[in-house]
Length: 293
Image (cartoon, rainbow, N blue to C red; front, side, top):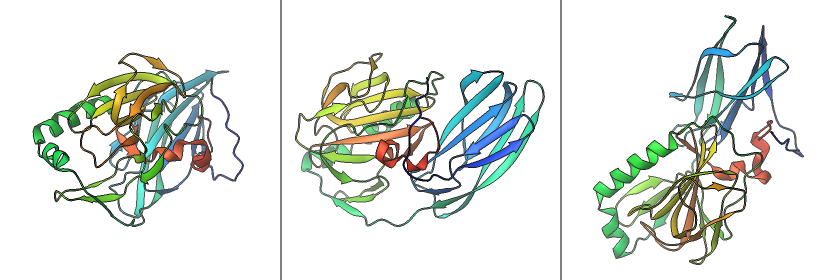
């Protein structure tokens, strides 16, 4: 059951009507790290389709079937690697009764420059950072997990922030390390003391709970429909793979494991393998969505 979120501000919604099709986009102007929500209502089930945005193919998920109408949804990410400019969303649909729909939409993406940051790694962390084999192995494992596209939708509303602490690094910030490397931040960091409780940000299923050399102790929760949350550098793992969790369940303790400069939680959100700003999915920031989460 989808719970309707009441928003106290105006949200732009763009709808496109065609015979047997009602296509809605949450917005056609995005900032880096934003989410583009698509909803498609048809009079017949989809037989085939193509949904492509920023050179990535997206899966459409059947959300509801009611009174002879089929509602499909997808959550698309505005990549932190794309520059400011106009991009194209391609949507091609064919239903079982052979009705067809094709359209391409212009999506304006803004990628404003952010002040870069500097990170001073300890000598131990510098040594860890040199382990390219561990980095590649962990990347392969996480890439496989983030590619999951579960047809069951677990989440039923806005997400919460996973812990208490100071927001020490935002999404997409370029950081330069004292070992000569740099990276674009794929999530957000909360700094606090080791042992600070970490909560599940929404309902879901734990699909990974492991200890890594680079990412430290790590948890990934599958929320369904291609939406997964990740928690890194934990001190203690309190859930295991296969566990079902509810919003606000304690799943771990904040730590300083893996490649870190100090105690913190890295929280990330993946939409069909595209990382987006997880803070935009919290209740106070849902101005992106004219939708029902």
